[in-house]
Image (cartoon, rainbow, N blue to C red; front, top):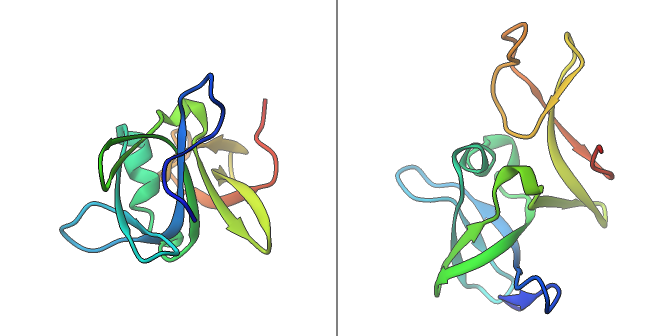
Length: 127
């Protein structure tokens, strides 16, 4: 997997893909197929996704830009810039409350019932 591949020339966005690594006391990172480590950061809701232990070790892709070599800033959460690959499919990362039927894009408690939301990987993003 090559790092920093422009998605579309007019957008200037880049993508990184690799195995999501979460280590205590360190920023989440990706271990790319060529063995490089790319540290990830983003807005607060994005950091919530990056630190979700249910995603540790996943085949993870992020859109955004390199702030410096080895440091990638993911686009804000509302741009839906994080994906997981599973069984050959590119899946959107979402969270779902079974009780209230409320979908969110970062892990945590449902804002309504306060139950923990479930990770819900989806083939299609919702409008």
